[in-house]
Length: 228
Ligand SMILES: Nc1ncnc2c1ncn2[C@@H]1O[C@H](COP(=O)(O)OP(=O)(O)O)[C@@H](O)[C@H]1O
Ligand SMILES: [Mg+2]
Image (cartoon, rainbow, N blue to C red):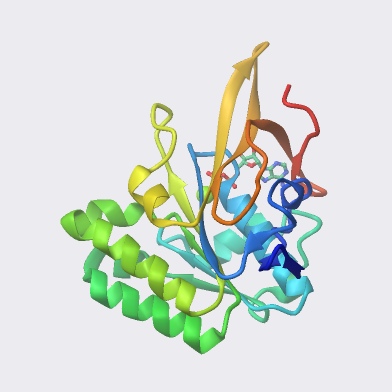
């Protein structure tokens, strides 16, 4: 889709595309950050399955050493995600071991080969922040190399960032990427409300401010119209 000179790839999330001029700039690398349980993984799955509906290949790379079987198990609970795409248009890779044992260069080479081999237009690394502990000093240069390589493949990539409740976003990642989307919670009247906010989106006249969202079994993440 052409829009203001940029090709864009729709997010697959009701209410997100309208915040960012129709979709993510293509190619680009986007950070989706937030504390545990805010919906980062759900966000990335909707993004990949939306692509699959449009016949695009999506590559989901987990750093958690979670058997892909479990990721798929939880994902298949969402009614709108078509399970037929699993293993065909939505591919899973587990780099848990690699992240713990490999050098930054080896990690980059592996990701490069997988993106090239699968010809994925949509790539997810969930969560990227795990690499910080294992790469130490090499983490920042790794992030810059990763973003550059992913963009060379002409894909839209989402890196997720797990943060503690006292931290808003992982600044090292936010600095390297083209777009930042924050997912947060807020206590209100004894319940926890979830909010989504586009913090940065290069080349895009995006909406600012927090909007509330819900996670539903039928539609996954749904952005609500008000900021209540
Ligand atoms: N099938 C579902 N129906 C409704 N809500 C769900 C469903 N699956 C997950 N959720 C909600 O999403 C939350 C977890 O989202 P997830 O994407 O795993 O978060 P994160 O990756 O940020 O830790 C759950 O705690 C729950 O509130
Ligand atoms: Mg997650």
